[in-house]
Amino acid sequence: MKRRVVVEIDLQALVRNYRKIAAHVKPMDVLCVLKANAYGLGVAAYAKALVEAGCTQFGVAEPYEALELLKVLKGRAGIEVQMLSSVLPDEIPEMVKAGVILPMTDLAEAKLVSAAAVKAKRTAKVHFKLDTGMGRLGILAKDALGTIRAVKALPGLDCEGIFSHCPMAYEPKDPFTAKQIKLFTSIVAACAKEGIRFKKVHMAASDAINNFPETAKAPFTLVRTGINLHGSFDPYGRKALKVEPVLTLKTRVAQVRELPAGTTLGYGRTWCLNAPAKVATISAGYADGLPLALTNRGFVFIGGRRCKIVGRISMDYTTVDVTDVPGVKAGDEVICFGKCGRDAITPDDWAALKGTHAYDIICSLGTRVQRVIKA
Picture 1 (spheres, rainbow, N blue to C red):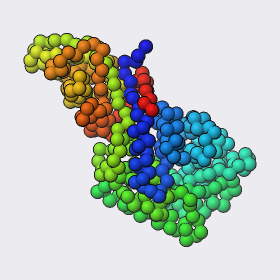
Picture 2: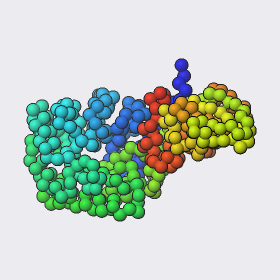
Picture 3: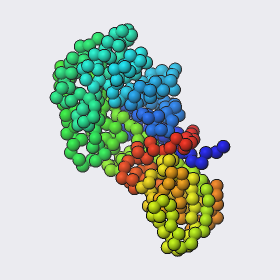
Picture 4: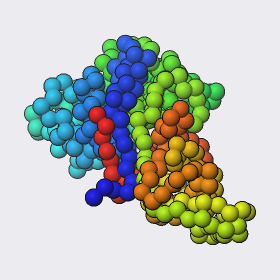
């Protein structure tokens, strides 16, 4: 049976976005971040399409994601999967055995990875994760050089990389990111003076690629991209990359009714019709990812026209004013976000109304929303 709510994923648009990003940062390498099951959209299709487009490096957040991605890409030569956050002590042996590139967040962790690599008779690739201002995970800047020296002396490790992350890269005018970049590159330079050099040096995620182009130049060798692959941006920043939306969220009309003036709609009676109106109830609500913040403010497309959401969004349904749309009936298609002719509603538009960013919108698509691949 056809599902009531589907999100269509345009893999050709995804590939075009990847190639635009790669061309924009050339000769830097590009690591595609596919954590959280590619933001909940299905990692298998994403990974296979990106590999075919030339991507060889992928980032995830935790071990299950790493193993799932390796399973998807089994038999593909030259593919690398990197954990970008942290690795817990009990996770280390299996990650070393699987060949996952691991983050080094302190010396104690490095010793455990070294011991597991020696025991498995393997060499574990690792990247030093520096906390230059994110305040979340990693080696503090003041401890970086000493920790790197100590880890380099451990057996079984290939210390091929060093990286950091930015909390303010979405805001090009904020001076904090520039200070971070200066601090990070000074540590890389100090390492080089001691003969410690890294094959992979990276700091830029999607926001920094757009707003801080210096993070895609030497001494950096790699950039990371996640949200830009979907054609979305943080609501701030320059949006230097000309990427396109990949996703279309669709549902169908459940019922259409002519309602008299004075009728109130939905929980809390937040909308009152000041004139007779034709109102459609559509088969999607906040359980499907429609933010409550769209209540009385958002729009959807029905019959090729923008139609205002009226009344509070509920878990399974949303009411929409279709007074000016002729012939609307039960079963008709509704585009919640996506293109409609020359017009479009994007996850970024929803994010602006919610006061959040597109990551939140995409990751909130419910489990009953069917993922449909358009190759």
